[in-house]
Image (cartoon, rainbow, N blue to C red; front, side, top):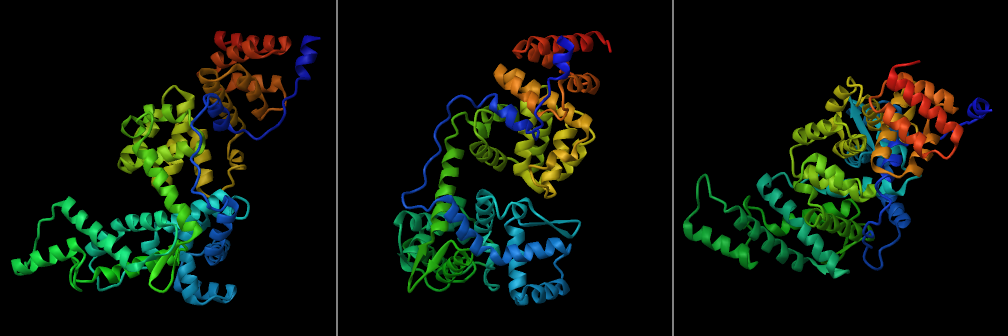
Length: 468
């Protein structure tokens, strides 16, 4: 009777979601509620609709380029223009925007669809992330005047967040002269903070003092910037660039944030607050301590912590530290380390490819690479062999056993690729995971079915003693 019951104990075949299961092990406690956007902000669906309008041409170009394995050459732009009924200039602009928004990625010079493009029609979050990436790159979308030195452009780019904050706080049109006044003050502050030491041929000291005073008081002349270009012209360039990505609109002598721009500035301010007021001090901690702190966060806030932690380090050192944690014994941290590496993106590709050769990291690395190369996150598990999927199942079970509740461990059975419990136990015994015995013992103790629990304990004993 016992063996018959066990043979009939079929598992529900569901898509394996290893990190989801493991994360639930430590996120059952309450977390602080997500901050609410300013009153009057449209819902996400409406913001996504507006973002899709801004990037409509970029999406068309990205899909054409991915379908034709384009490399972005002039000849291909001509072909795309004819096929999409757009001008070559629109194709060039759409191509640049598609790359900046993560809609298309170049692998070996050949275009492939980015994950955001694959999710474009069904995932509002992916759309908004793509638009925010474009918003962050506004100065590349609308190149600066060629006759302005890079130092002057860099000053304005660094000062623009304060201009955007004023627009957001004003919640309506702001006269351009008021924005210019703020820009002048901020540029003067940046120069003072840097304690700039002049170099090269110097003007007459009296002229230099007068120019510095003009910037500080907002009465500068046409040659007050470091490059000799008026700040008013650079402000016009910045406002036009932000308008080009849909962040604001320009009227007769004033500028107004669009709903998308207003929301984006609020998001950036919230990220700064998270980075500055991290409850566990994640930014200054080691990778291991940071990941342990993020384990209690839901995925969105955790990604914000990853970004803040990564921003405080060089990419190479951060990737090295994350992979070192992934090689450790804690399976939960292993999965979270690869989640943080997803935030790193292309800069981590070479190291993740190297990690494929390490058995403990191989399933995670293969899933990471599949998503990076554009596979739908729901289908990435298909890149794993049966043995690799079983190894990952045991590793995730170890994370749940170490950090979670027994009910989660029992439910984790449903994510196994095998159709029945006996088949699962046979393959678990064969896969050789170092935590197999502990996982089986914990599962046997947690499962309410006496027959199944007995079979699992027997399997644990056989692995422990080296039996068949």
